[in-house]
Image 1 (cartoon, rainbow, N blue to C red):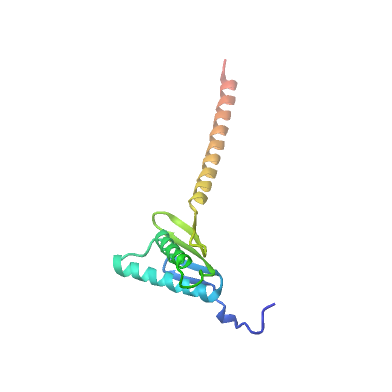
Image 2 (tube, rainbow, N blue to C red):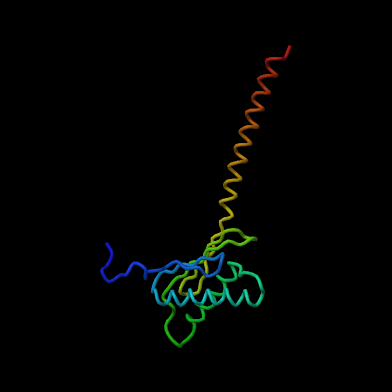
Length: 145
């Protein structure tokens, strides 16, 4: 059940930081929006400076440093939101990063999903090879004088 005070089009938690990077927030929503705006700004500055889209790991590292700075500074309290960054990079593939309010950045690479699929294919090929070896043994038994 939704609150009567909540307007459906105003509760956004998933944003695009760049063409290939999506960002979602948890925690205090206004502070999360501040992090999203910072992520968009970092992506824009990187593209203007280097002429290429920002890699996902670079954006996650920069956001981690930004959040960690507020944790250490005496100007105010730490940021009360967690940001999750997901994106696709040509070198690393699909990556998922989570930056906590303390500035710690957790990494999850989805390369292992491809490895699981490749391993499954290899197992199927091994089964086929075993079947062929079994058939060959049976044929050799049958045709031995």
